[in-house]
Image (cartoon, rainbow, N blue to C red; front, top):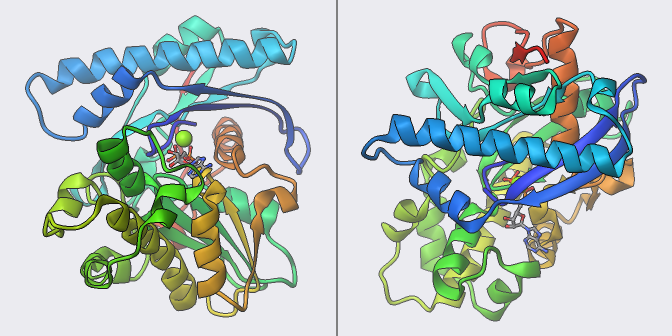
Length: 355
Ligand SMILES: Nc1ncnc2c1ncn2[C@@H]1O[C@H](COP(=O)(O)OP(=O)(O)O)[C@@H](O)[C@H]1O
Ligand SMILES: [Mg+2]
């Protein structure tokens, strides 16, 4: 898995032969700074972008192959023992309203280098069927994390935050709620030269600016009813800077961005997950203590914990979900939830590149 944060590659080795996935090994491989910059640049129209995109797709495939090799070595496992790699790829454009989404990563090259079959391009079929192509993890959450009597909500705080609503006895729903870490990451990179605000410490040193927060919270996406999905196409530095006067203290902007992420999540839960009892967090943003504290304050009636409490480590849930999604593809089973993505029907997702 390589998500919107553009931080790197989460590789997980899974045994999916039983209903409860068994995590055998994990490996994290950070993106080199120049790869992150080149990927960021590709999010916007630019000269010669088709060529650039293909070169980056190859570089990503080599990165995925290196991560796979390190993962397998740590688990003393050979490529021949692995059924498939589920490879999300790196999103550089997500435009369901225009009928497409692009996740870079040359799956043919990854299959060639790893000698393992690859399943990729999980989102396009759902978009072809009229859906958002996202989020796709709710089907996995439904399968593995729902409780027969307790109303749970799973919140993934990646670059973008998304949630899955698991009310007992009713349909599972889910959607992207708004920014996760991506605005906070971009702002601290510009002002402090750090890739992210560790534990929310810089945000905690500032003070949220009420009128800026109000302006940010006016974004229509945050109030739109699901199905909805988002990405850097909407939430980016250009979007933020259009709403700044330029006189704000940088740490105060960081504090405000943290509040924006917190409200995006808590308002979504209040509005669309009424009666939620337990909230389980995953994704890198779950390590931001200040953000988690704000969520606890905003949602006093919910018990908030990490997905670790349910037996799935918060840092690996998305990677595990894409292994599971690849298994669904190979077994010819649909894995999008039309109630989540808005697709006209369930679809078998993904493309298969045999080893
Ligand atoms: N200790 C931490 N404190 C605050 N933020 C963190 C911490 N650890 C990770 N993060 C955030 O999590 C992000 C990575 O999260 P991840 O779940 O990989 O997102 P994505 O799926 O978008 O790649 C980092 O860019 C950073 O913003
Ligand atoms: Mg990541």
